[in-house]
Image 1 (cartoon, one colour):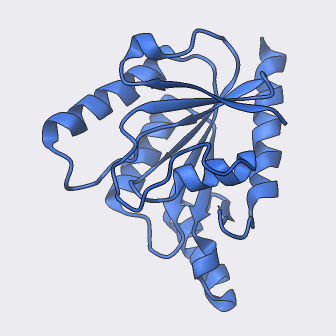
Image 2 (cartoon, rainbow, N blue to C red; image 1 turned 135 degrees about the horizontal axis):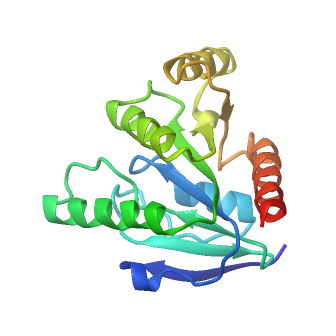
Amino acid sequence: MQVEFVASAFVERDFPRESIPEVVLAGRSNVGKSSLINRLANVKGLARTSSTPGKTRSINFYRFDRTFFLVDLPGFGYARVDRGATNEWKRLIENYFRDRSSVSLVIHLVDSRIPPTKLDMALTDWMEFLEAPRLIVATKADKLSGSKKAAQQRAISNAFGGKPVILASAVTGIGCKEIWKRVVECVQASMTRK
């Protein structure tokens, strides 16, 4: 699989003009979006990771096999980012969803170790309002014991009204096959509709 970084968009004019399907990763700061991108792409360092929350401040586009974009949104909810920057990110993300008709799937990442937060619930409400196809992925599952995994998966699913949840880990790769299966289905469905 050929993967390439295409653009970091800080403003709308930076968005790529190709009209290919887009799969979006959205979630709170430090939930593991960049690490998961690297694991899914099987390319170390493709997406820059940081232990400091709030590092991704642009919308980053990665093209897979010239077929679709994987889109990394800035994480939300990090308290140390000033209000002006938070408002800019919010506007950029809102404009992205308003202007992009090629969004095939939104992968909503939550931390498997904790219950979904108010911000997670606000994001899910917004995605439902936009009628965006959505997949819930609980990251960092490698940090849970075997018995805790099933309990956390159930609890997160219940918090989202019984929606299916995939447990995933960028470290061990669990859940990645299931994520790819859904990505491929949604990208193919999107291309069929065109």
